[in-house]
Length: 260
Image (cartoon, rainbow, N blue to C red; front, side):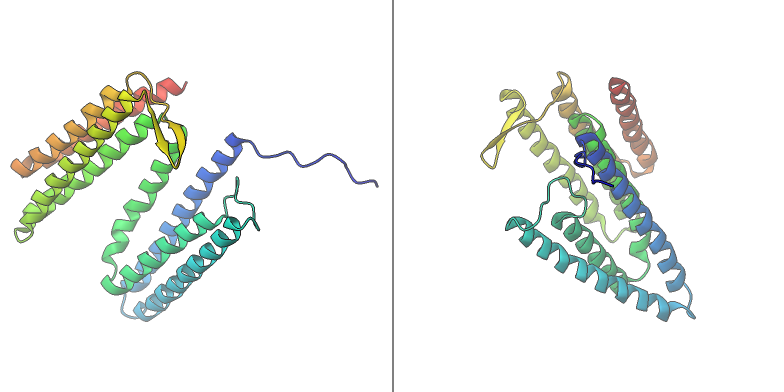
């Protein structure tokens, strides 16, 4: 039978984006499952040694991933390997390797406490990755502002409740204020330049909608006020976090409807 002369159809941007999102969700889900097994082993004395062996093995895999990522980056930079529309590219392998190595190093040093944080961090990263590729650019920033503010509110409440780490509560408010000021400055400059900026000698369009600038000014200010409210009235932390979550939910509904 003669070979077909029809070449392989190149993957479209939509297919590539979908594959990337699915890959990120798969890696995060696999990470959560691995962490569940690891915590199960480390929680019991008769399996603790096996858990530590697993930590070391995963740490080694992370280090190998870092080395492979660097090698792939070098090959791609030299033109020996294509990196366009590749999920398994040097940058992605390097990021996964660094994340795995750092996570296992922290778990090996601190025990199971970081695992509980990773249970939250991994799904949140997957959701933010989906938002980044599926929603308007300004909503990604709004979601990032809200997520950071929620984290700072929780940290502020925990710091005040501990009694011995009160300085962290004030540091959280300062961090929220600094991030808000930086965003306001950047948004003001983007607004003056009609949403365009120069990066590495190229002009990049932010593709913000007409209402984006108002939302990106209101959001950081509101979130900073909520963090300050938790610092001044720790007993109302759930109300402040509820307001931030409700604001994020309402904006999510708004931008979801715009996609239809």
